[in-house]
Length: 186
Image 1 (cartoon, one colour):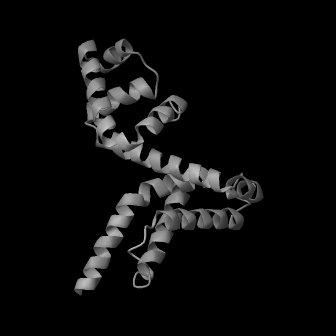
Image 2: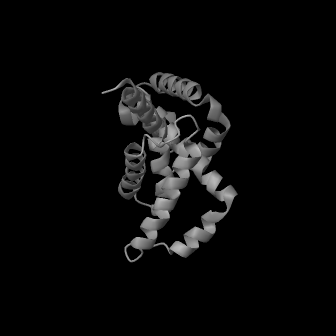
C-alpha cells in the first residue's frame, strides 16, 4: 500500500466515523427503518471509497453526504413504494424546501451525537439518566427500581449531566430542546 493509499484510507475512516451515525438518523427520518437507512448510508460510503481517487478530500463533505443520503432515500422510496407506507411525492414536497432539509440534517446529526454520547456514559450512569429523562421516573422511583440509594441516583444524574454537557457543549441549546420534545421517543 502506497503512502497516498494510506492517507486516503485514514481520511475515509475519519469521514465515516464522523458522519455515519448522523446520516443513519437522517435517512431514518425518511424511511422509518434503521436497517434500510444503514444500507443506504453504507452504499454512499462504498461509492466514495470506489471513487476515492476522484473524491475531493479537501472540501467539507457534510453537505455532499447528506444530499447523497437524501437522494438515495428518495430513490429507495420510489423503488419500493409498494412496501413503504409513505407516498414519495408527499415526502419529496415536504423535504425539498431547503430549510426543512437543513433542519432534518441538523436534527439527525444531533440525534446521532446524543446517542453516541449516551453510549459513552458508564452503564449505571446511563441507566439512571435514561430512566429519569426518557421514561419520566422520579429519583425515588429509580432508587427503588435499581435498588440503590436516592443519593446514588442524584450523584449518577449529576455525573451524567456533566458528561453530556461536556460532550455536547456546542449543541447544548438544541440538546435541551431535543430532550424536552423527545422524552418519550427513546
